[in-house]
Image (tube, rainbow, N blue to C red; front, side, top):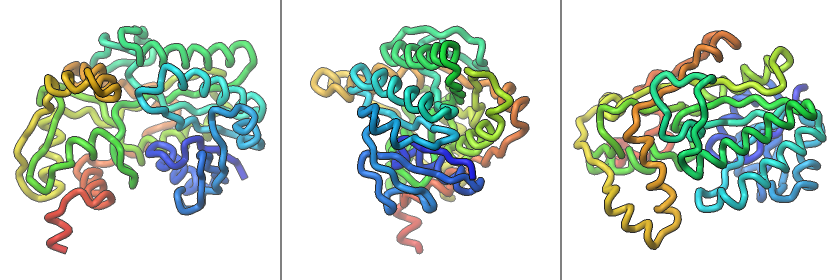
Length: 318
């Protein structure tokens, strides 16, 4: 049986990926600092390890065919933690002889990100987050070239969906459904790249199954759903069956709050992504693994609202 070790298995992305690999018939080991069976998806074997401890991580990943890197420190900790953890992950992949799967994002393109961005688009380190993500991917590219450690990057837009809370979508856009309010953090007509996590997880399974046919370092883009604020609001209204009032984000107040809150300051730095139209070209991924499932946005939102109990009116009606 093929074995995948999912790092960050208790997180949003790790949970979705673990579920998809279990369903695909893989043996799935879920690594987290306090991993317990009840905290992980059904069928996932818990393994306790701290990603900042290289020896412990190497031991946790022993015997893996594939390692999924779902690690994501808090925004305020990126500068101190991302690269050391990346070094530990790639060392564990090398020790196990495993393929390393990495969920990428659009940060690498900085302020130059645009519509139909493909894998050949140049990176631009116009934010510190872009600088760090570029450095991390360069590390993995270097280890692939020098030591043959295979890394497959699947780049996607903003995550939404899955049974765990914590995305912009559920924490901000849908958080006031009980008051019939839909919140959008930018111009309502600006296209924005989204990735429905259950669909994205299936793409990772497909790439893992194809890993023997791929190069030592490969990058793919996941097209996902490109939606404007109007698109997302309309899909939400259809999903819940009623009209919503549109609200924006008070970025001026949030910038002021950033003078005292490091986390708020980091979130505001990335607000350009809500003003900048962007999307990802998934043609290379489709050529490689074939056409993948794409959940209808209305169906996806309806599932999210149900999974996370986001609509008090529906609960009262039930």
